[in-house]
Length: 455
Image (cartoon, rainbow, N blue to C red; front, side):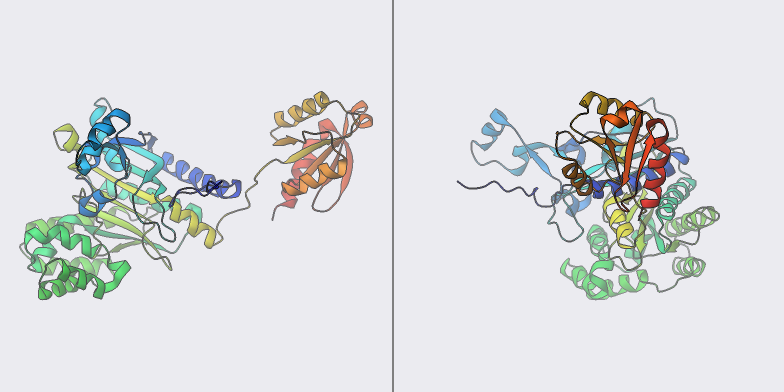
């Protein structure tokens, strides 16, 4: 008989307690920071109508949407003949949190004028999973709806920068660009308008494939070699001084009001971020493209030293909500790549000691009724301790061996003599120290042992 594989599907993961404790620790930081900026939490369904998602992510993004097949009779009818892809599915797993949020806004007209939302949920991509990349992963979004002011950009960048700093990251940059500026740079490179999206898709891979790789892809997409090289030259500045870069761009676009307007917004954003957690971490980067098709204004992306790819990104998407609502609504958001943030925090040893499992294991001698053990456990739980009871009438040595197996710091041993005197024997597993103490005085001792036992 063949055996069933116990591995999760490719690109999906199980999370053991220790890993989940790390994730919950960072998630707690994110929630605290986002709420301190006035963002309120929402959730949206894992499954969206396929029509909601298609056409929002660009040519490559649409191909990575996880479609869900019709079920039962509807699927059978679709398969009767030669069905196209569109005949087989009308729903899909959400690709990101932004498009479902835009639908949510359009579906809830009584929200505040300036609605500040955060959302921490899983998304799915029908991609080939590689190292550090998954088909199911968590995103942590902040968005501001209803404001045209660049203050909104400054706020979401400040919130994300504060998250990174509270996790313990100090060496990171938030790269900035502007979609309108990119369009004018593409025009300046004499690339025809019909190749604009192709140019953005290729340029978005600069940090992954380098200048030669991007130039090659631009040529493969039908862009003349001279224009491809000109675009790389215009966008790939080595300047580390944001103000010098602003002046360079202004001189390149004298009289071009669309480009100058975008440059002005970037300049304002730099000014507004002075004094925020993002100050000193912003870097103008004309090569930043952000491949998603719905961005309309400033765009941003987190880069961390020694980490290939980004740690998150976002931007302004003023037209996306209007696609559902019928009228344009200004919006800006930033998404943290949660999986990569957890990985970086672990690799850089930024995680504190995280207690996993119980603080104390209650053991008993055969002459002790289990009801008395449960009563003692509930007393300690009322005091805020995490308590596990050894469930079987085994020898004490076996019970203490199990305590070591689950890496508990303290064992509490109950015998009939202890119960008569309202006492308990506590044993610190790491040192072997043992003490007989009144139950109502034991909590403080247990806590002191847990604290000194941390590594």
